[in-house]
Image 1 (cartoon, rainbow, N blue to C red):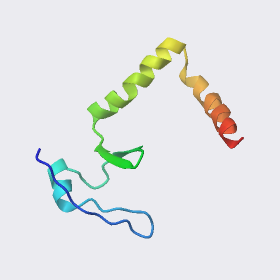
Image 2: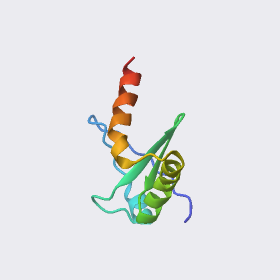
Image 3: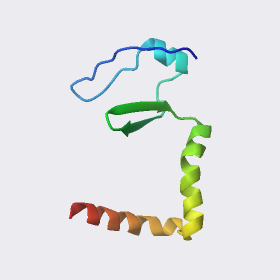
Length: 87
């Protein structure tokens, strides 16, 4: 894929429109999910596919195996994390 550079604009509601040429090049369809990654002052938007979702969750699944964490433990851990952030 060759480099495509386009300018966009943020609406008053915080919405952005992905330029048509980029949507065509990436085969993005209405309702398709995308991933936003923010690092310092760089925002990356990535098309989500079954393969990329697997790649995203693989490290989490491996970490769970190492810690013996079970899915039923997650809600309590989230509550503890949220409480610690409020302090």
